[in-house]
Image (cartoon, rainbow, N blue to C red; front, side, top):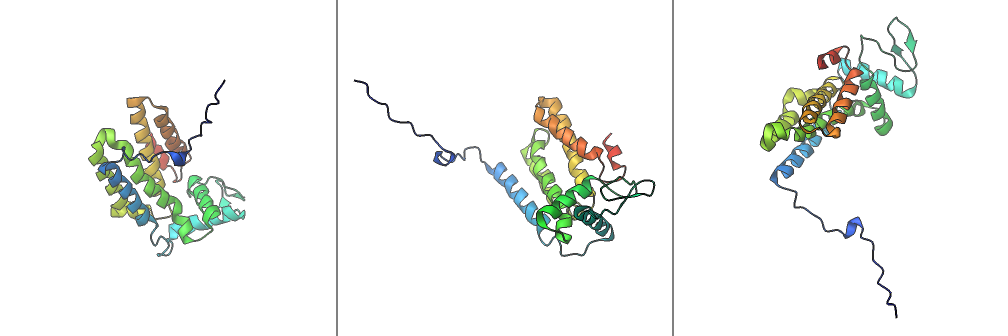
Length: 210
């Protein structure tokens, strides 16, 4: 007589025991730095009025977002969508600010969100520097990225600077880590940094990448 085997219950993610064996003080310290960086970059982000340069980018991004155009192209013609003019920045700066307006509405805080996220990304990216700096060196680099006054200022400022620093760091990390490991993920990181920098958010500053 055949005996029916009990039906095997499928294990779900919530059924698994929480594994904290990979956590240590270095990971905890790094996560803490990233969380402090989030606070430092987003706290009172709109307390100060927009600087003149910020207001230009915020205004042009708002017109881009609302479909009212306003971009002056090289040669003097105007466009309802983005077109490049070496006097101004773009397109990355305007596209990311437009995305912020789309997700969070328009305002001074929203105009500075892309730079704040870039500043947090700088801190998080330092984790990939451990093979060269060691864990403690990477933690020190992350702390400097998070709290150096000039860097903190420009990653709370609606201009190109914080974005370019992040993308340049990605290019450097991606290049050397790919040479060392051959891992495709680092080649993709290099490509993303180079791709965003190739469409310069800041006049001809992307030439510095070469």
